[in-house]
Length: 327
Image (cartoon, rainbow, N blue to C red):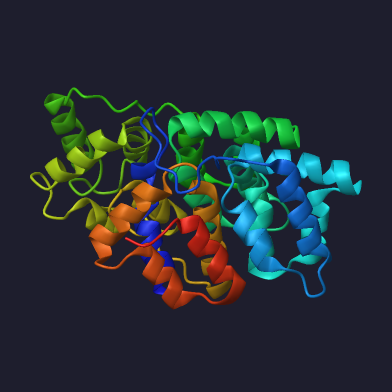
């Protein structure tokens, strides 16, 4: 499913939640009646064969806070937990999306990170995507919620589950020291960073990874984009080529994710669907409209059309509803 590699090209730090306007596809519904929605969901869950369309129609067109109100009304009228009821009524990819919508964006992100590092082995792909594609502001909130949910510090869990330069980069990002975007363009600093990246990598024998980590984890995205452009005046290779030449494995994937124009390829078929679910659920109330616009610009095809071509059934319906329309 080429969808994911295209999609991840858009979902990078360029679409983080720095102090800028949000571009959600899911917004607060007007004329909202939580008791009425709760009654409709209860009927949908009890219907023989389950009325998935009603569940999709309601929960994808309400904000997170409204979904919580519906859950409260549901429990009041049925004496049952709505999330438990949805879990019992739904399955597969549709269940994953709907249950994801019952969490706040930060709760969802924290849970996905926790899921990637608990148990045997680490799901590095998920960890890279979640940590490398969130803004400093978002990471601060994710850390707070992570501690609230799991009674552990995110930094400690990440440190305990990774190693080497990959761990150093993730921990630098989790510290959320990234500069806020500024209207003032610092051309001198852009030039210094571009030269530093070149001198720490391609120019020398062996890579000074620490310098790369500092620049990649602490500079704002607009600044980094200008640094990567300037980098071409120093190096015979562009930044993407340099990353591929200088580092390998998880560190390479992480640096490529941090470069806004560089797609991260997910090869596992099951993981692809999980990634699409994660991106749509986690960004629909943040910046999915912006991702949609950029996606069309880069691919000459809308996100809506791409989802239509690569998915089917109720999973397709729920993604298209969250996508919020064609472009």
